[in-house]
Amino acid sequence: MSGGAYDDPDIPEFGKALAWALTRSAAHPVALATATGAFAGRLAKVAPDAVRQMFATKGASSSMSDPGERRFADAAWQENPAFFALHEAYVAACQLGDKVITAASGRPGSAQSPC
Image 1 (cartoon, rainbow, N blue to C red):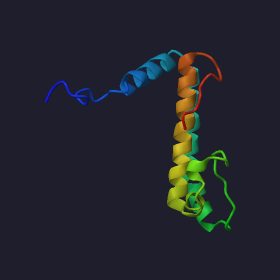
Image 2: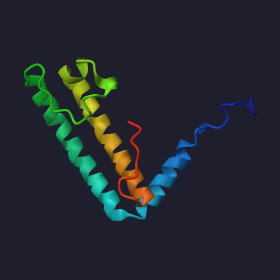
Image 3: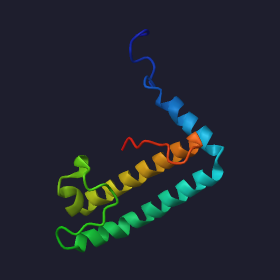
Image 4: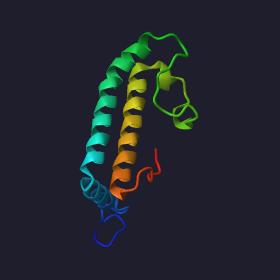
C-alpha cells in the first residue's frame, strides 16, 4: 500500500522542526541549561503542590497557568490532585518548549507559546 497519504509518519514534519529547535538551541548552551533547570525545578514542585492542593480549602489554587485559560477551566483541574499535577506538568513542559524555541531563535522573548 504505497503512495498513500500515510506513508510518511511525519507528515507535519514535527521531527524536522524538533531537530531544528534542538540543534539551534544547542548553540546557546547557557539558555538551554537555564531552561532545563527551570523545568526540573518546576517538575520537582508538582508532587508537593498536588499534595498541598489535596488538603487546600476549596477555591484555593497555586496553579502556574493563566487563569483565563479555557482548556483547564473545569473545577476538576484544580480539585482533583491527579488532574492538578497533570496540568502543572503540562504547563511546565510548555514553558520549557517556549524557552528552547527562544534559545534556538537566538532572540530573547521571540517565542510564541502554542500551549
